[in-house]
Amino acid sequence: MQEQYKSLQNSLTVKDFSLRKTLLCGQTFRIFEEGNDFVVPFKRSVLRLSQTDNKLHYSVYGEPLSEEEIKRFLGLNDDIELINRELSEKAKNFSEVIQYGKGLRIMRQNPYETTISFLFSIQSSIPVIKKRLNLLSEMGGEKVETENKTYYLFPESKVLKRMSKKEIKRLHLGFREEWFLEFIQKYDEAFFRNLSKKGFKEKEKALLNIKGIGIKVANCILLFSMNEPSAFPADVWIKRGMEKLFNIKGSSKKVTEAGRELFGRFAGYAQEYMYYYMRSIYSTKSFTNKKSRGIP
DNA sequence: TGACAGGAAAATA
DNA sequence: TATTTTCCTGTC
Image (tube, rainbow, N blue to C red; front, side):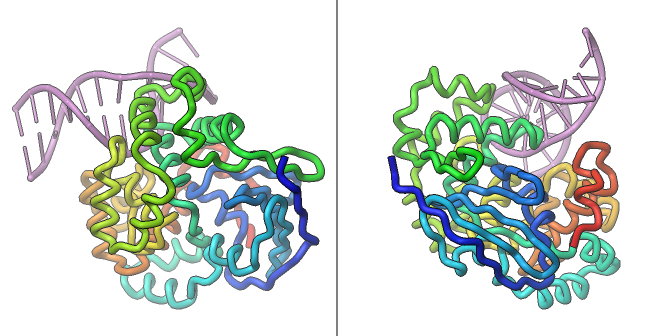
């Protein structure tokens, strides 16, 4: 049993930041709501986060984390004023979309975990993806205790490599199962650490080489975990948005290329703003609830 | 309870 | 090279 650590509650001052939007805009899946708190496993720790106006409150369980690690994780180092200014200059009539999603940040997540998350996301709704990832973590991740609940870290590659086919069947992955089995045998955290040092095209090519990863998932991994803010994943919502706002339609590849061309180096932020905007306005599902509306 | 949501790969044109 | 078909699970 590892030694458990809990920090005192700390807080840091934030500007143009919405914790809720950032965590609920589809870039990350393993988030747990406890009242006003969000509990998020990260690295070898569990973070408890909450926000009041321009204060972000956090405590850490498991292993200690520096303030800098937390800021990087939540995209708090991004120059959001520069990004928003540049995006509204590049695309006409996009200010309303930016205004709507204001506070969203692109997170910097672990690429190994993010790759598995988006492999699981193929042809799946968010609640289904969450269920699979949480079950996988309970099966192979280390426990971290908090006051009222036990959480599980995302499993390491060495643990997943030892998992039996029978155990993996419990995830109900369907046609994704053979991609996952191949992935955990062939790849590990070190592969992604090395790949992260390369350029955009080389990263994208290596990701597309993984069975089960196409243009959309590759761009999700680049954007959410490989520090490539120009990546532009085109899912159904982005396709709807690009058609509605700019009359651009076509395959995922075509829409991704058009989005990167239109928005430039911060296209990923445009993508997240558009995703949030389209889902909030057009979704009939729970995403459009009171909670996610109009929060700072 | 059957329609529907959700991407990649293989097959086909 | 571009388009169509097939794959599977969970939800409402």
